[in-house]
Image (cartoon, rainbow, N blue to C red; front, side, top):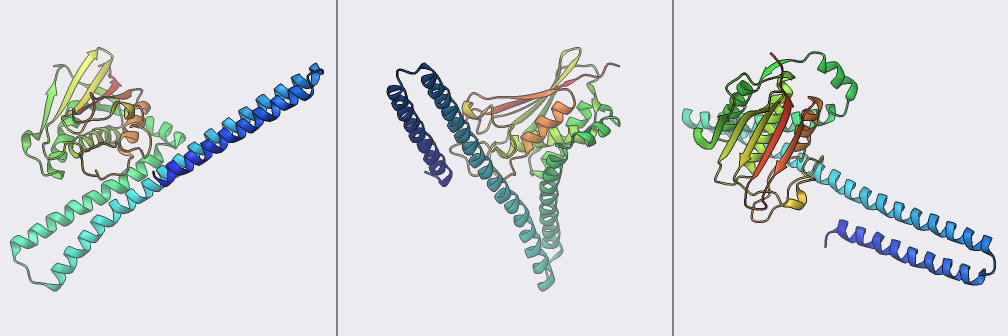
Length: 302
C-alpha cells in the first residue's frame, strides 16, 4: 500500500469513527430528551449538520491528497524529462571536446544531440502550453486571429515529423482520407498541429515495439470533421477512460514498461479541441487491445 493510500485509508477510518460517535451522541440525546419534541428536532438537525460536515471534510481532504500526489508525480516526470536529455547532450559534448572522433561518429553524435534537444523543446512547450490554456482572456484574443486550416495537410506534416522523431519506417503510420472534399476548419494552425502531434506521440509510445498507427480523416456530417488516431498497443483499462484527459493523469497498464511523459498531452488535446468548439473522446476494448482517439471539430463552410 502506497503512502497516499495509507493516508486516504486513515482519514476515511477517522470519518467513520466520528460518524459513529456522532450517531451515539445523537441517540443518547434523543433518549434523554424523549419527552421534549423541540429538543429532539434540534438534536436531529445538529446531527445532520455534523454528519454532512464530516463527509464534506473527508471528501475534500481525500481529493487534496490525490491532487498533491498528482502534482508531485508531475514534478518528478518533468524533472526526469528535463534532466535526461540535458545529461545526454552534456555527455556527447564532453566526448567531442575531449576525444578525436571520425566524421561518421561526429555526425551520429550531432543527430543524437538534436533529438535530445527536440525532446527537451517539446517538454518545455507542453508545460508552457498547458499553462496558457488556463488563461481565458488570452485565448479569446488569440481566437480573433484564427484562419482556415487544411486538416489533411496538417495531418501529413505531423505524420512526417512523428516518423522522423521516433525513427520509424514510412509504413508505421498510415493516413486514410474518407472524404474527397476539402477538410478545412477555422482555427489556430499551431494548436491543431499540437493536437495531432500529441495523439501520434501517445500512439507510438503506447504501441511498444510494434508500431502500427492509422490516422483517419472523415466528415461524418457536412458540419463536422473527425480526426481519428488508432493504435494496436497497450490499450486503456475501461475504468481509466474517463480520467485520461485529466491534467497530470497517466494511463497505468500491465506488461508495458514505464512510458515517459508529463501527463499533459491528452489534457492539452482536450482543451484545444474544446476551444475550437469541438471535443475529443477515446475508445478501447481494454488492455492489450489498442486505443482509438477521435477529435471532432466544426467544419468550415466554403
